[in-house]
Image 1 (tube, helix red, strand yellow):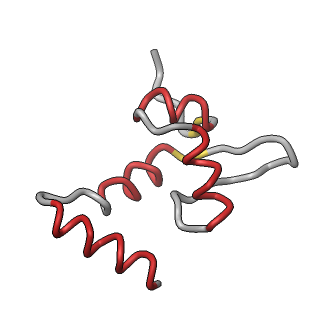
Image 2 (cartoon, rainbow, N blue to C red):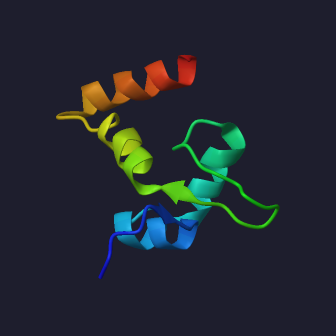
Length: 75
């Protein structure tokens, strides 16, 4: 199976265990992964960009995770 460059929210949700509703909320708030919207009904995530976004939120403990979340919300 080939590795697609772009995935729809349902495929991102399935692959990474993130709910589609969380992805939608992040899109609305503007604090989620970058996405493309080539039409009014299609949302696509570039896999490499999504994985970079996710890696930037990887933490080794809860204090670090809380600090990163606070920093992201302040930006």
